[in-house]
Length: 391
View (cartoon, helix red, strand yellow):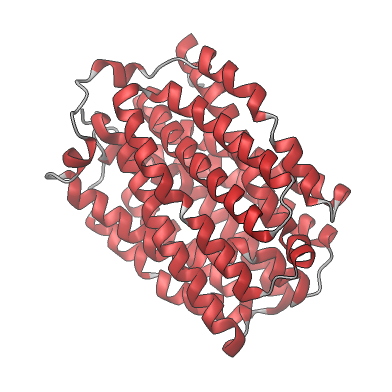
């Protein structure tokens, strides 16, 4: 059993709460997308454009994440929770799809910020031999936010606005996180760099950041459209009901829960490099395959997609954290969000272009084929398991 001191327990508790709130609000649009499309009479190209706009939130998170390397982790996590909670409340009252898009853009910016800084904080504060396990616990907490949406939406469907109202509860939690989340001890020990961006552009960091960014761009080509348009495809093409869709997502979540812990164990036992590349290849393949194999293939592929992607989460989180210097770790994590935004926008626009010509499912599957290249280039990175964090 892993022994944590009081500071580590408090860090995991309050950073975990921030991730739960982020995941809850961030998943409402995915579950409620068919109802949103019906309310605003939006077609697939329009929804692809909406998703492309939301992906820009990763770009907005980048300058905020650099502040975490200068002013600490605690303040930025608390500010991020306050920011996306206010945006959730604004989403609940959206009179047009343009209003909703603007509110969700703001929310995504702060959700990405919280995810990047919380990951950096947990990597820095976890016991060195159990970083993968610590990140798997953080991932499980994030999954619980999705679980809340999965359980709640069939009860209130098609009233998606009610869930955004509930997701605004973070405005109450943000002051508690500000006050009770300990500042990162690893960050306090290092000399803060005058320019975190300049640091990650120097050797050897620029190569590492570049490889992970390229992988993120390629995998986002399929993950962004598959994730955003998942419920729309299931309801319009496969004719599944909201309850059936939630059941499939619930089963995927159950598979994810086990996979998160398995991934953390694999990462701490066998390293980051080979498991990271193999799991990335697996979930990328199944993310696209489910959209061209009928109902049975859709369900089976989504279970496998969820399982492999969840197992990869703590592996990649630990690996990326160990590849980056503490003085610029939050900034480097945010580079991944920028890369995800670029890849996500490209993927959504590609699917939006292909959908009227090939169909929604084949369009997503084709993006998945292209995305497989992201797994192969991970093998260019060094193994970091058990090594001290670079300052």
